[in-house]
Image (cartoon, rainbow, N blue to C red):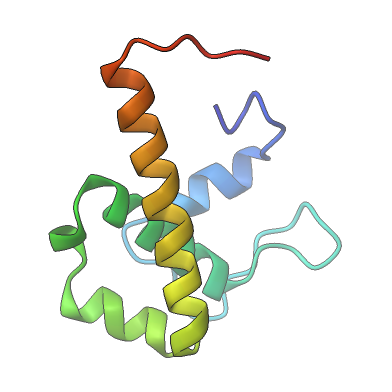
Length: 97
């Protein structure tokens, strides 16, 4: 889906890294994708799977780059999209464009 929406291959590869290295920046936009955003994307994947999938270490790394309000916002957005996806999938609602 990311490719279909125009994500660059370097971004997809970086997101799939086990642990993005500090200072990692992915080229492809004006500033690139910063390390903090890679951590946020990884956190989003974990929360989507299960809130229990987030380890203490992952949470600490995220908290080193994002304040409490930002972490709440990230978690809320991920949770809402996960809810909508599960709701629609369970009811066999077709994707519309």
